Image (cartoon, rainbow, N blue to C red):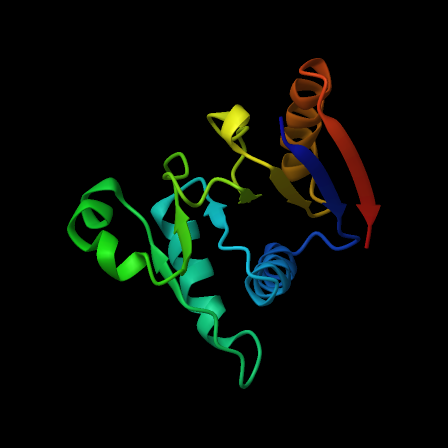
Length: 148
């Protein structure tokens, strides 16, 4: 079962939440972890896709937006180890580390080693985070909280 880390940001800014996610994604990538970024919508996936190109000058993080249709068509390309961003459950091979920007718990928890949850200080984000925290706690998962 996965370890869960909650990162609590002092700002209510979605942009700062996404930028912090980019930093975690970069750290994971540099450590050799090819994570999956779980989002609520195609629009949120697009925001993360765009930010990963621009959030830090000189930074390069190979990434791709994931859909089951595109994955089936270009799996050989993705086997070159890229970060995937999408709204569906993480495909096999990208389940070890999930960065959860969605309002739901990831699926197939038994396949995941780490879940990174990033919460800004808005009531909507915090309430969804509290619900996920309770779900993880009820499942007996190890949970760490980090105030940023």
